[in-house]
Length: 225
Image (cartoon, rainbow, N blue to C red; front, top):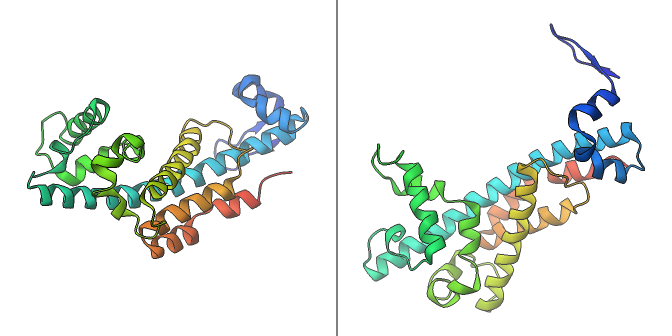
């Protein structure tokens, strides 16, 4: 039983929290704690802190990576004399749909003037991860996008696969955290390593910065037994 200070101070029991959160949601925590409800709730609380740290870290990675890729796509469009890449880059239908949705959100469905940076910010993490797939290897990766990660391995095929692998992993843990799913069995230190390495390939100072500001290491080390 615990209480909260303030005008609306109240007490609660673990049994009440189990009812409110539901046994299904607490299932993985209970199994990890040998069905000990008190320990399971402490693990659930830790999972919330871990999720916040994951969201903050992957959000920083997303901004650095998308800006690096955007710079290369802008350069690609300039070399081709095609104007803004948002309307001219050779995307498949899925990619074109993603751009169309981002443009709609950025312009409030046409109610304000389109600005390139706003549209880029509206493109999802999944869009940028998808640009790293095999389908764009010849059309975008080799001529342009590989330059966004100058610190990665020299072999371009291996570089693309390694970038894609880390993006897939970080997007997975980010999505689980965003939907309040259990991440208590994940190796969060490995996730942090992926994040630091990926942005370090963009620029070594970015890797150093993300490693320094992320709270993932402290949170992972504070996981309840």
